[in-house]
Structures are given as C-alpha cells and as structure tokens.
Length: 523
Image (cartoon, rainbow, N blue to C red):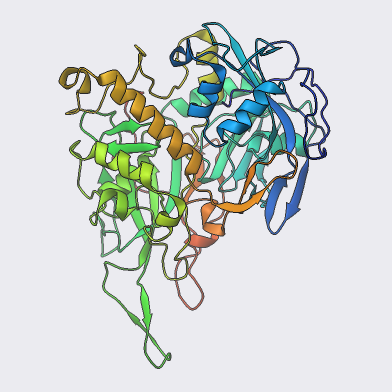
C-alpha cells in the first residue's frame, strides 16, 4: 500500500520495543495521504557489503479503492495483503494498528465505504541494498550527476523507503536537501543519473532530455556472440533494432516487441566477445566452445526511451542480457527466448509462468555464466517517477500509474489478439484474477524466507540478497549533449571488464556512428 511520502509531523515511536507491541491502540495523526514515520538521522548501518535500515514504525494511508467498497476491513486486508496472515490483521484491527479515518474500529465487521481513508501502522523492515557509494561524477549549483549503484531504487517504492537514492543522498547531505531525479533508471540498472538541486534546473534539464539533443549510451553483457552488423574493414559494425514495444503487464514488468506498440529504435555495436570455456579433464587447459555459448559486451544507443527498451530489443535479437530475470528466462519464454517473436499468441501463458516462478525455480532457469550459476535474480522492476512526471500528475495531464483493476474504465487495453471483453462476458472476473496474480507475484519475487521472525512484530524475515540479485548487466554509460556543451561518463562496471586470464577492452569509446542516430519517435 505504498504511496508518495511528504513531510508531516511524526508521531514518535520507539525504534526498538519489547515483544507484544503495541499494548494499547496507537494514537494516529490526523488523516492524510502521507505515510508517517520519519526518523532522523536515518537508521542506516553497513554490514557484509550491504546498506541496512534498522526496522522502524511506519504508517501507510490510502483511500478506499473501488473494489473494496462494501467489504469488511478484515476481508480486505486478509485477501489483498497476504504477506501476513488473517490472525495478524485481526489483531491489528483490534489493537488500533489499522483504522478508518483515523478512528479505531468498533468491531471486525465494519464495512469500508467510498471516501474512507484506511491507515495501517506497522513495524517496517526494508530490504538491504548494496553498500556501494553513490559516486558523484559532476556537481555545480544546479545539478549533481551521479553514478547510481545497481539494485538501489531511485525513489521510495514498495518495501523501499530510506534505501533509495533520494533518501540516501538526503541523509548524506542534510535533512532539508531535496534531490530531484531528472532521468529514470530501473532499480536493477546502474549508471549515469541527473539529480537537480532545485525545480527550475530540473524542468530545464528534463525538457532537454525529452528533446533530441542528448545522446544516451549504455553497455550490456548479453548471451552468445553478438552479430557483427554493418561494419567496415572487418570491424564490428552496427546492428539496428526498430521493433515497436508494447507494455503487456506494467506491474509484472513485462514488455514485448509488438507492431501495435510504441515505436522504438536502438543501435547496438559489439565491443567484445568472450567464448565460454570448458576445462579439460586434466585441468591444464581451457577449450573454447561454439559461438552460441559465452557472452558479448555490447554498446547500446537507444534513440527512444521506452520501458525496458534495450532489454526487449536484445531479447528480440536473440541475445538477451545474461542475468535478466525476465527476458533471459527460458522457463518463461521457452528455449528460443522469444527470438524474432513479435506475436501476441503466448502473452497470457508468459504472464502465468512469471506468476508461478518463485525464487527457487528461477535459480536454475537463468543462465548466469561460468561462475554465477544457482543464484536467483528475480527482483522487482520499480517504475521511477521523474520531475516531469510529477508535474504532469500535479497538473492532471498524466494519470497515476495503476494496476489493472476490475470495473475500472481506464484499464489499459488487452494485447492485440486478446480482446477478452468481446470474447468473454466475464471479463471483469478475468481482470480481477489478473490483479490477484500480480499481487501474489509481487509478494514472492526475488525474496526467500529465512524461517525466522521479528521478535517485535512477528514478521517473517527474508534472506539477504546475493551479489547477482542486486542488479542486471545493464549500465547507463554516458549522457552527452550533441551540441558539445557537456559529456558525462561513468567507468565500465566490473562485469564488463575482461575476467582474469582473458584479454579484452577495458573501456568503451564514444559512439562514433552517425548514420541516422537523430531519428526519434514522439512519446
């Protein structure tokens, strides 16, 4: 039930409390749409290469959703937020941790109505993120250009609040610092990001990034030998993918190449190819395998900015990112990984498979390379909101991103070839089933229970993420002004460097191909 946080007066709650808390109903603040719980200084600590947040008490608030109307409070929580059992929610209602319009409920059969604000105060456990520092590439009076670590969400989202780029930067500077992200990177992606210091520069830079005067360069590590493309003098050339991209399920983070989607174009150029190696029985020498194995380092130039554009285009070309938990997953897409597949024939099957994939199954379904097997990387793909997005939301020009809900009139249309509303009179039930599937997926993805519980709130505890759960092999390498006014670049990540005993490039030069890179599609 995560919503955007703003500053409000905080009802102080102790960070560490004895078991059985709260003994009495909790006195909540006035009803608002802002989560409450803002300890300062932030309760960070570093351990085993991870940035952790000590558990803290927090209050979520949300308006009654359409599908909740006329249902009891206990039924809503027990059926829609199944990360905790019915007994927990029963106790939370009885002890005042869950309220309606700021008031404790007199009984468990209270019904939720349109306009009600539901509040839930809990002991919050944030997942750890990498302890890698947020490196500053450039800073002036208007903007900070950073090298974002993989695995850290930009904004508070889902179970992440203080373990986000925005909150970490605020904690490192001062409480009044208001970092304004301008470009968006998925949680899994690392690399160059722009953080404005004030709204005026944020708006100006956002407008420039939306224009066609900024070149964005990425580097990726992909399966197999990436093709040579159109080059000269025997050198690797450029491979172009201009498949349109359609969002099949935004909440599942699933996008596909589809003619009915938004136009998209990406240019690719192979930087290096490293064949897979198999040790001889005597262990003395490694023998190269065929070119279907191994991996390539690829320089990517997206000319449009669709969600998961580079990941989807690489999959379509038959060379998905090596450790991509979605697009490199053979159990989801089959042995060919949807190479050259732009049909809608298997969309529902793919969504069903994604739903069923727990962490244990994924560990064996994604090929991580020679020294990275048996590690799961199923992690959430949080959509990040830029300053421009926020302003459009405030002005009403852009609707809030929503999951697909039964009875909604503003649902995204089904994929081409899947007009369920016309083919099935029970369309609303299908949509509701999809909602439930997505909710269950979001609860289970990328996490594994330890079998232990918090001594304060009895919440099941999760295991720490492994090194390869903190990101994928996709890095925003550089952003440059085509007029030559500025050029910000970050170093190659370790996974793009030649491994021990191998020879290969240790840096990627600027993109020199200028054939038709000015082509872009309107948003």
